[in-house]
Each structure stands twice: as structure tokens, then as C-alpha cells.
Image 1 (cartoon, rainbow, N blue to C red):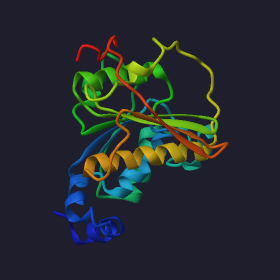
Image 2: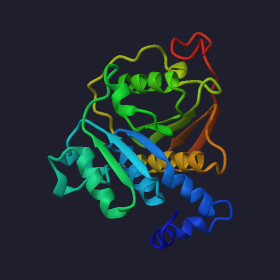
Image 3: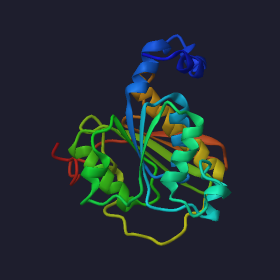
Length: 245
């Protein structure tokens, strides 16, 4: 049951004919696991909290450093040296006190993923390396959890929604096991804002049941030429993660 203050807080989105009280209460009952509290995670976290997602679980092992601040908008000079999950939780508490936040400061591995991720309604990939993405993807497939993927570089980004066996999984579309790279990825802050905002919107649509998501499609955004392209993607029957599902 929404309180009077919550109704006032969410009134602009509740004005949508397809939204109303029912959709808002779905969001308030939802749990979202966000892997990464950096460039993509920042707008995802901010907009999901503002929308009224009831439970946000945020996982990241890093601390806030100065070079983060061109794109990681939930952090600030005042939280330099602070774990990113704590910095994000502090910001969200100021944005929406009705959201329950669980901050987990650790790296996701194949050994700890079960105890960390649990059983959310959706997992959002806001990571910056494919090795951890593949670990999260494997967990999502094994437990039949929706996985919303996003990736960015420079002025480009991509996003897709995976729900195997109805869609491919992330491993289906990767060219084999990706080698770990120590290369720092160049990125303009607004790029993270665009793709992270799209991820937040996709998650909100899924949780409310409003609209359609990017199942079986990958959306590519080129900010330099300001162009969106969507391509069809399909399952790899030989995929080692979901091929036999």
C-alpha cells in the first residue's frame, strides 16, 4: 500500500494511463541486483531509486577515485576513497528514503555468486569486464533470472535483454572466452548516462509489464554520429552455458 507521500513522489509517472497504482506497487515490491556501481551503474541506480524500486542490491569492489567523477554521477568529491557501494547508498538515501538498499563491497566470483546475487527479479550488468559478466550470465541462466546487459566505450554503447531459453544468453554472442585486459576503456560521461538510462528504463518496463523489451535484439548507440541501430540476435545451439537448455 502506497503512502500519501509515496503517491506524491511518484505522481508524474503514475499519471501514465498504463501505470497507475498497480504498476507502482509492482515496483515497490521488486528486487533488482545491480552488478557494478560505476559509469553504467550510476544512472541505473539513480533512476531505479527515483522510480521507486523497493529493494536495490548493489555490488562493487572498488572505491571512489577522482577519475571516476567524469561519468559516475552518484559519487562526488566528498566520497573519494569511500567504497562505491557505500557512496551510492548514501546518495540514494537522500534521493528516496523509501528504497531499501543493500550494499555489497566485494568482487563477484564463481565461488561467491550464489550468496551474493540470491534470487532478485532481475540482474543488471553494469560491469566493465567480460570475465565477470560471463560469471553473472552463467548464474542468471542456471537460475532462470532475467539479465539486462549494457556496455560502453568512448561515444558508443550497447544494450540487450537476456531471458534464455526464450532468448540467447550473453555467452551466445561472445567470440569465445574473452581474455582479461588491463586497458583502461575511454568513455565520455554522457555515454554512460545514455546507456545506463536505457538499462533503467528496460528494467522498469520489465518489472511493471509495460511495453516491450530488447529480447532477441541488441541495440547499438553511436553517439558520435547520433544513431541507434538494432540487430536481431539468436541462440547459439552449441553455447556451453545455455545451449542445452
